Amino acid sequence: MSEWRPIADYEGFYEVSDVGEVRRIGAGRGARLKTLKPRDRSGKYLTVNLCRNGTPRDFYIHELVATAFYGGRPPLHEVNHKYQCFGVK
Image (spheres, rainbow, N blue to C red):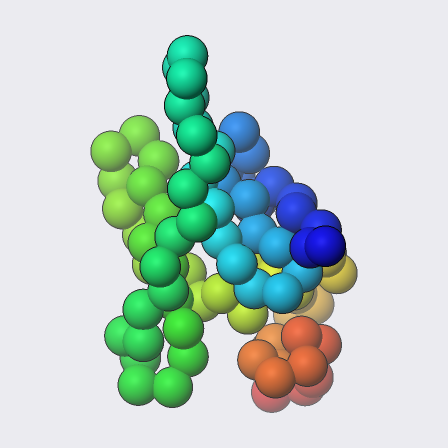
């Protein structure tokens, strides 16, 4: 069973799981959860498009997982997309 956590700055709208799935949390009566389909826009990393206040923005899924489950990224570090950990750039 996957663990789901809210995405920072998108709480109440989107969640990310510990296995890299992203879902939209429905709003209103009868709304359902919808898992978003990842896209390979960068040529090597999967992204999802999140929308807030009518403004869409692409996010790398591995960075969403790392932020939700491990906290913010320390300065001068990057997220290892295979192991979801931080390393120096």
